[in-house]
Image (cartoon, rainbow, N blue to C red; front, side, top):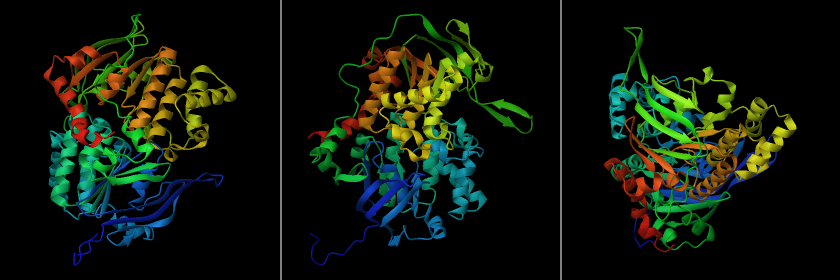
Length: 553
């Protein structure tokens, strides 16, 4: 009860009776946000948790007055500083975005303009939203990139989005969102692309900004440890409804609902015995020897490319048939670049790639169609890797027709089977990628890769878009599919718990070099390199911070 005479403090954000639905082309209605209500005060941080498809991201976008194609805000109100975003005209909404409310989206690559240098994109926000001069915007953009923990900001500013790691791209997007110091910051899975050491730095930065600015934050994430570390209150969603809400310590320490207890019990941890199956001792499928690569920076004066610091230097490893090899390291360590070289999206400058005993051409375009079938990749950002204009069922069926010559009926039947193996409802076959949650998009991308029946699957941060409960389920499904098909996996991730669960061997990378490699149990239990020990310490830090909150679970 408010004490007599105490001032009435109006919430910065007030959501009442919000209902949002998707509509199919046939007019069929699917309600994805159902009667959601909550308040948020200045200086307060609300965490929104729930499995993929629970409505978290749809709700997050609605807080900027945005409804994605095929969806509609049917009723309710979203008051930000007393103004109802639901009833505002498009022009008034556009004026609020970036200045009063800003968003850090789940997929940084799809939110950045691919043909513009990232420094220019930060400067655009400062010029058009904050009204800075070109010179002032340029200086401030470098300050923001520095605040985001990006080393050599001048060089980073000159790169294009595809030349940055996932973690670097995410921090550029965070810089854009914070450029105008908005009163409300909505963060949709902001740490999914970050390794644990970088995640800790970004979370520390967010905490520091929160204390200095007293702005409100809505933090959408599947990582319950992050919510325990950074949020004041938590709201748990399931099937579009709020299942439970309250202070983090109260909800996590004594959850009232079975679904909340299920989420809390699903978090993966690097302890106990590794669940990874022993690697097969058959023939070598992939050999990498002396691999080197550098991103080229164009020189206008010399009219040729001048290379920067090497991205990869002297990479050597092998991968056996049916084996799962993990690759870990912080953002910018070269993990994703390595995956691009193996799949042929990039061509190595030095070194040799051998596949099944034969030399493997650098570029995918120079490889045979059979090699392209046998080596597939699941990308870090599933939305940008799926065709936005084609239904997901058609995209999964296409490799079957292209590589195996299946007719439409057989391809559709196999697609339904793959969806079922990955826990996807067949009703999703006719949807477009943007009509799916992040976790559903990622599973569609995995289904498409397995549709080609590859011998080697390169997985780049495949669980980055998934909540804890779905992550565990997906990894079990992927492991079963991998063992059944005998597919080798090159598992690139910043999440050490995924490696612990899936990979029998692991490679530790930093600054483009391999620091350590060996059996996962041995490397994780007795790391020989200080950097590996630091990664392991960072991976368990969030759990240690959250331990008091989880004590009652």
